[in-house]
Length: 253
Image (cartoon, rainbow, N blue to C red; front, side, top):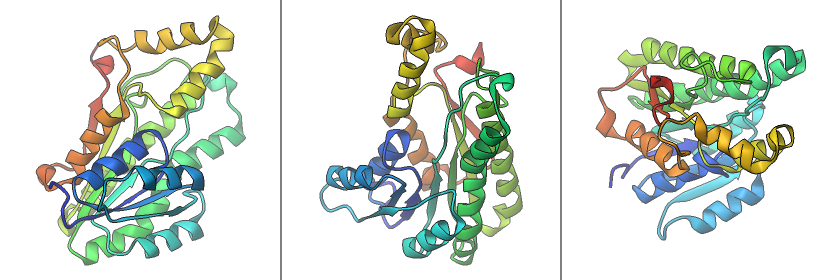
């Protein structure tokens, strides 16, 4: 199996991409340490894990340094860090507040600083590891409508990824990020429902998300998880410092 003998720590693994990635890692033989702020989601994730998988699951608040420190210590000797915690703010720059900027950068970017500063020293001491950060095609790659704040945070993730890769490549650390287009998830469903009120209903809002993907469909969380699996595994041993786009051709047009 592709991750046999490896131990992975994941944030936001209760739903969506994080959940699909936790399951993919477990199926490929990794010992998975699943964290989220939603204890109920973690409980149902454990029930869905393949038979015989080594799983630990506990509540971790990626916005709280003390919580992250405790979680990293509990996770033990990890080889893989998957940073998936995030939030999608809807609106133009004129529709944002200072509080929303502080919250979004704290969750989407600073949470990665917390996990990295807690986990990297141990990974370096053990000879290296793979870090996979969740960015987005809506970043420095595509200027998506009504994503001013979100796009700024995800562009910052790309910059952070490249910096970590450059600074720690000689210590055995690989750091890459994933830049998805629109992905099926509970988060997307919530956004479609919320935005539907302004555009004529749920169906119209969903159609708008689908229309911006040249392939004419929305990605599945499993498709993104497969890329995370590749970047976490030794199959990508010569790959670091890159933003890996998986967006159905959105950024290519």
